Length: 275
Ligand SMILES: *[C@@H]1O[C@H](CO)[C@@H](O)[C@H](O)[C@H]1NC(C)=O
Ligand SMILES: *[C@@H]1O[C@H](CO)[C@@H](O)[C@H](O)[C@H]1NC(C)=O
Image (tube, rainbow, N blue to C red; front, top):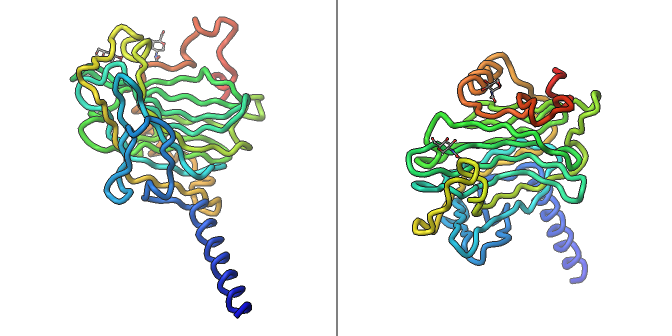
């Protein structure tokens, strides 16, 4: 009997190990398995057997969740459907972040607007606690009408932000030029919906209309590939992707920190001039 007991314990440990190594290199689908709701006192909900997650915001509080896993490089997709109607003043954030005072961070932030006016997608990259690298975009579709895929490809050479497979921003590893690049601190995936009507919509001019609450954003089809033996680990933009990136930058980019000479009177950040 003790032998049987030991062998079943061993096989249990073995399958546990297998499932652990599986989930840390490739996580897909189920929100119960992959995320913890971290705040919002019942305002964040996992529905449809773990296939759907909703965040909500009202006058008393927003809400948020975070991934159970940490990633050191990864190819991460999530589908989001943003707060519809009058979403002015709200911000839906979806980002990777490490901990500590020299943290790394890769951000998508969606700034709401009054009905019929465009959301702004704001991106940023922090290396060793230093950010100030905002690029902002309008989208070429209504992000509240349906789910769209927002992706972060983070490998040792570059970070690529994509929307429905179209790259909108590339942040290259320029450590050799002295620019910190996130490559040694594991990051967790976070998302939250909160009120930011002091700055979000037209620079804070338009306030949140609480008569519209609760505001709700929805998430589905999370996918994270963290296996370094897959193609994304060395992926770069091919010429077609490069053209798509230029198309977005020429037609939808509304702010680029690398263009803001007033903000950086001592000279633009190093990565803006290096290529
Ligand atoms: C909201 O709409 C106004 C007017 O079209 C526009 O200037 C602004 O960039 C839009 N987005 C945000 C988040 O303010
Ligand atoms: C970059 O700067 C030029 C000149 O100030 C301006 O016309 C253009 O709109 C800016 N582009 C972006 C994306 O900020």
